[in-house]
Length: 255
Image (cartoon, rainbow, N blue to C red):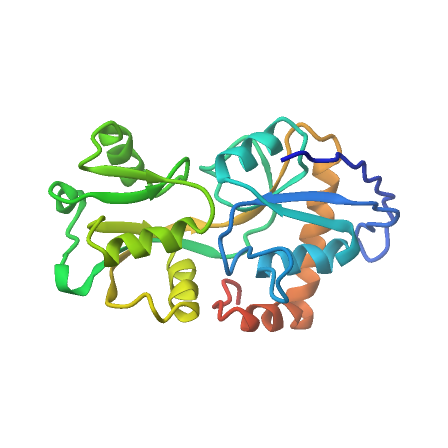
């Protein structure tokens, strides 16, 4: 997917200690489909992280596209893309991160009739676990995946469009035993697709904070993060953040 690189100049205005995004032309934003964090670009509800960016930098300045996660990280790391949405610090520790914008978890899902119980990683010994290629999960699971990745009876990697939906359909058709994914993401899909049913959430493990991340190669990234963080603070203070989160049924992570 070809991308045009736009330069965006910031003029720092010391007004109430908030940076201005004046004269910003266009910011390229990448992520894979991970609704409700980031959804389809043309949807009325493009994802709460996209709405935060649009509110902070101006809707007309955000050029948001979906590609696979590995490429989204790669394009942002080398500087041909400015912003990555829906990242943990484990995904790309060299990036420049916003203030926390939520808490992500890793939840195990299986067919109800499978009666799968999770009591630690030993519970995965006799199942095929569906994961998404190049995703970072919680530390112990990452180690388990790395150890067993070459064993297709234990780990099955997935990537591409509608990847979570395809994994859920595989659960329904007995082509996978268990999948692991963020609970907001799976809950969003199950509400949207009632034909996907008889799936149960078995166990959730909190991973930690989730962020909007900026390219380490772009010299303007630090100033952009400062501007975004100041806008996030103001949105929380004014109640605007709560209004966005309610649209996506997201519990606030701030008090």
